[in-house]
Image (cartoon, rainbow, N blue to C red; front, top):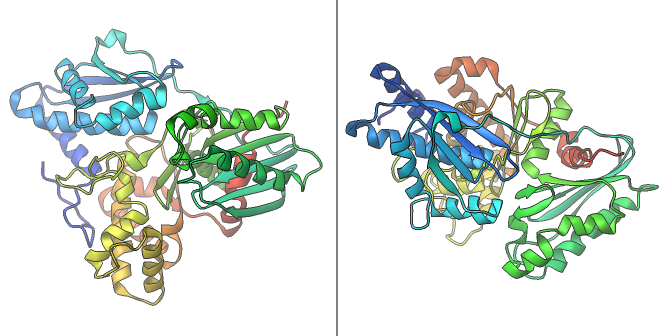
Length: 462
């Protein structure tokens, strides 16, 4: 289905924004004269549930390909945004069967089948049709975590290259530091356990006592249990099960079973921004090694949603860039991370060695941008255009008042270009959203302490 862009990405003119494609499809539905109501429920083992409602074209042969594309891409987004292992679909039995075959071993989304089955929710992913009467009511768990600043607290953030921590006493940061480490390919989980504990001990030495500990890290955590996390990619499956899955329970025991909470780093990023700006309905988006996203609801809570939008589709063209992990096309990680910079660099005219790591390529592009190199400006302009269209797509799934942008890709003058271009896209294509959503970046104080402070505020004392 063809879409017309008012602003095409400078280095990637074939980009097909999900927001425009979906709007074009929904326009066809409205003029069809016979729209079909569809409800999709994503149910989790704890009985929390997300429900998404939409409409599709009438079930005739000429509409099948478009409708399958629309529903499959929507389902993919919902899985990575909200999570779930039982998908119930009402109103489109003929499509539920096709989607179940795609999200199955041997299907096009077999990676997602495994991820949202045994790996994340410890049971098989199931997609099936049902009557509207069997669609459960939406039941999202908003977690009352964060904004607790009383007492003596430690906050930590575990990254791929460093461990950050802060010691806080009644809301005041009395100590903070970063310690380098290299966890990705360490096979012995003792390296991770003792490294994290060392960071906690360093912070604790600056406090009279420790009342609570809160932490953040990339990955998926369910009630403090590690389900999927890149930090432990080098650990064997047996080592993961025996030592890693309940690593934070073991650390909590070492620290006298004081309140101890760990959540995804994207959630803490959004929470930090919300606390600093005193605003809710905040979507935090960090462009670094990958795309990390978190969300604070209009009511000021974080939720049990996954918000792993690095693996949610944003580009619907055939032959879109492939995500190296899942193999799927057009997912966010290829548009909002240092991978995006490296992918666009050759089109901009840079000739980096094939074996140059992505972080080094980003540094070279940043240096070129600082020197006034127009090639670098084109890369940032392209990412900003992607972002403008993608914010509109995200707004179909989140209520957003502020987009908080951070991460290494946003550093320096290039970050300003990204923001300016995203604003231009919103103003040109989605003026109502341009007025509603403010794009912001953290101040220097929040960059230094915000993440660890927000993490420290997660547990409630008493």
